[in-house]
Length: 287
Length: 325
Image (cartoon, rainbow over all chains, first blue to last red):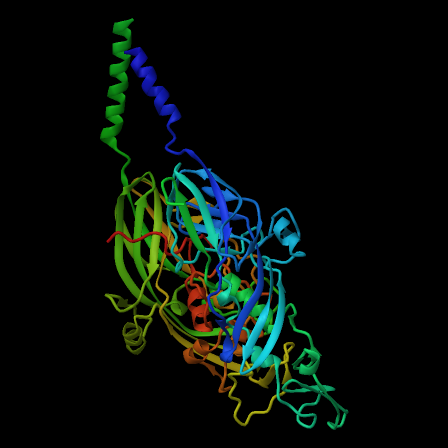
């Protein structure tokens, strides 16, 4: 009787209902099948898209963020994702415990810590010179081509100590973490990121008389203008394998500056836009 | 030894039995509706934490909400729950500072309880409160709206700088440009009136990380469902403390595309966040409860979904707990 009672008590003491889990964190991109649409009929072809991702937290409640005091599972590292490559790459290990996870939150390589005055760039962002995203590609419309490059650093400015992106009500996410889980793949797709960039605003068909600037673009012709609006000279940007950008004249590519419309469009897409896909792999899944 | 053990065991059982017969008892809950003073008194321009920092003042003439669907669960046994189904359409502008008692729950077992409520659409069984006109109530029912909000932004030197690709200034002359090079026009008073669907469930709510409320035997406890009125002017979607938030209103003034002094739903729907130069790096969209934030009407709906709290500043997870009836 006493031995049986002891065994029951012992079993009750060790059975917490939760078991530790550990599975692979993987990252992947999406190969674009065709140029992606942007505003006003422009089409985007990306040459390179490298994203700093992490850390990632999986939360038991429906809402992550400050209401997720204790994550059920976490990957506290960071990784650079080639967003144009659909292959999966190991990025480390997710550690946690069994049970349901109904929400998530993550950063783009730059974390806000309550112990630090300024957000901190993790290793992945450091590999991108402190940025969260480094993009390059071309925008095309009606025979015109605009090469572009963009560096974006995405960091917390509102909620100190909180991850910058968290699951919304309209995102679908639910999983029961189990010992049989072998991997979580987070897959990004860059195609929507430049959808709201206004490339029309970067070009112009002007004249010195109509635009009060020292340099005016008439398509791909750079016009040098006097203070009185008289055209002084012309330069074919195309002949020099350059493009003519409003306000700049001939240049090799669009370089979106921090605070520009293009920079803000990409920033909004990464924070308030379409979420990455979360793909679970468990024991017995066909590799 | 055996006889002593048996007597002690019997005494224990007897004392437990006597306690069980008395039971924990029951009490009552009164739920009040509370308006933050940003609704009743508006938001001032200024440098204080809760002021609008870009010089605009905001006043509401109506702030009507459909609210109710109270649901409470015994914290230690979720199978024990009860609810008050009434949904009222109330003008929060008229709610007294002490709160408006609208729901009562009786015979709640003494103990800790989780608190949940909702701001549903007005179409299905809502009751008009005396603070709401029949016309407004009918409009909300027809639209199955959660909110009917009307107000005005004012600023002595106010101006609107609508996105160039959408602006319809007509005969108006630009008075200059903003920092992003967008043409601006004098606009010292900008009105808005939104009938909005933003159905949301709130809860289980907590105050300072203490969940719900406690019921004491033979006593009546009070909790408040508090709605804030400044989230439209937040520069993000903070989930916890709102101390890091900056309140700004220029973005709304910039949505007056035809510069007629009124911002409409159609104008907001036409504008993506990236078109608004004012929505710059000060803003954070990553916590939006609706994604993608594809236009400024979605942005408005998303901000309105975050307004429900408990007992003032208590936090309530949104859209997490399905209501059980």
